[in-house]
Length: 452
Image 1 (spheres, rainbow, N blue to C red):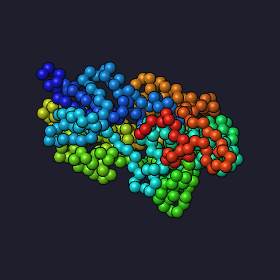
Image 2 (cartoon, one colour):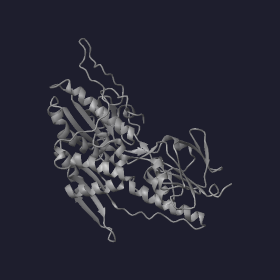
Image 3 (tube, rainbow, N blue to C red):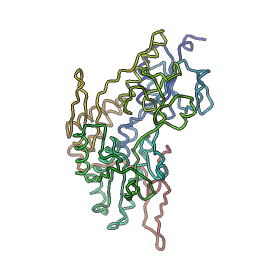
Image 4 (tube, rainbow, N blue to C red):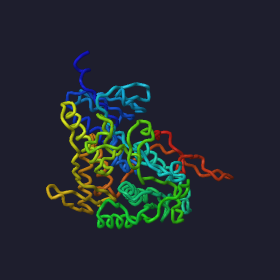
């Protein structure tokens, strides 16, 4: 057996923020690393809503994982699906029946959309947690717009309901409003007035509950100024193909329902024999080692530590870096150390020259609160610099500048996919020639839209 195969084996499951943080932090360590990820790319999820609303190409927010090998020779990238863990044998089993032994295992495989058991939500609403889901929303949006253009002056417009008033819901609604006002009004003269409606539904009485009240109020004002309707204080009781029914009895027409109300671990985690906490998240200690499972770590959205961390990029990245240090400590016979999370702040964008940001100042730990154009510039800088790879940074910057910058914002051209030909109903029929059975769509599912 050569020296390379005798090195300790670290298996990282998941190529998101946390998984990549572990991999990069161990680049020069005396270990072998296997990165297991079902997709061939890393997805920059904070900008998926831009893909869903035609602002960016999907390639702008994804990075080819095998590209990491160009600078990191101790890494093997394996595109498969984890289906089981044998804790006694210290090995994982993949969907292709391959078994991979490990010395240390890091679970960073993220979460999926949580419909909270809401009747009809899974069938009739679209989540936005993956690239394929964002593309599905984009394609259904333009399918419905094309259909609406064939029935000018009627009630057959487009009503979009966004479920969830967190950062994702606000950003989706704001991007849709920007697209409607600047891009679609001149392109679709057949669609008049309120035929394109956007409504945000939030169970709580306010949007963006994790932000300071002044920033919540600013975001709500900006959305309403952009023509977004806010329905606060009532949850979703049922999602139908053509409507969202709320717990207060209100029924809101919905040709397209976007679900951004929450996430939960993938169902297969139930089979991994791991301790769980609220919401099904894996129970870990302060060092992010799974309780009762030495050498097994969990980070990111899938894990919950005694110090509750928000489900954002920074906690996953910092936890990944700490786990890498803890793995090295274990290899050297030292004790692991707890994660000391540094809250750098949070931000959300509403539209052109409109954003909110809470930035934690160093040393004092006080919060600097920004709004309007300055917050938007900070948001732009942080997101561009957080992307993986120089090409993605350049193309994303170009895409966002041409969507929001002066004077391009006056004539933005959205990025669209394959929309099937839309034809008026034939005499004697009540349906269009394109038939759709997809959730909340009102149009055909284009053949180019990949499966989730």
